[in-house]
Length: 227
Image (cartoon, rainbow, N blue to C red; front, side, top):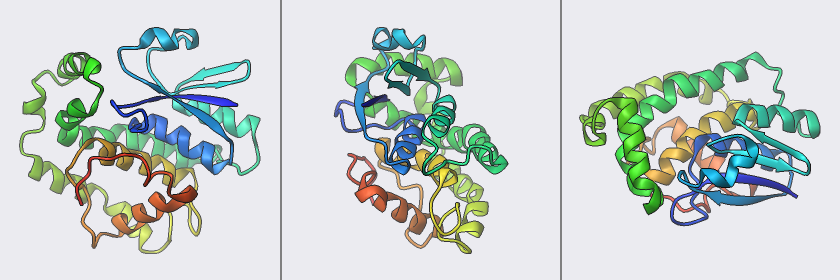
């Protein structure tokens, strides 16, 4: 069986990395059974076999891969049924949009809450590495949350316009485009009590549909969001 190493909080079931969520959703899309193996940031020795210091790491028989995009490409080549259509240019765009625009915008609102979510043994490491990246204490990074939240919601306007015309970013059924964006929202849902979306938002309605996919798999994962 495929094994997927995923970043988890204290609760093994509370997996929250958006990069791990990409792969998790793709495996469900392809109807491939897998074993989730919870991993923490300070357990780098456990994935040294993959020549990586971060997850996701996927093990499929003799094949070991790290890096979410490489894993997605492998899955689509190795298991072509229920294709992810990795050749489509808009998917590459959404990959870069989430990584360059969406995730950084979110992290400036929730990084302090992520610090509270990670396993206790990871908290010192998380704070030290993130404060080095931001060049300031986590508490300063998230200053003016309400202003940042308004800016983030405005940044989703292209999604809103699309979701007013279609049920999913993939059109009438979900595909990798949906999984790429939804993974970021799951990152926030699992780690922060702050609701990023209002209930009258078309993006909220779309997220509800995504939460119900695959037998409500995502909805069943422990989260911190307060609705």
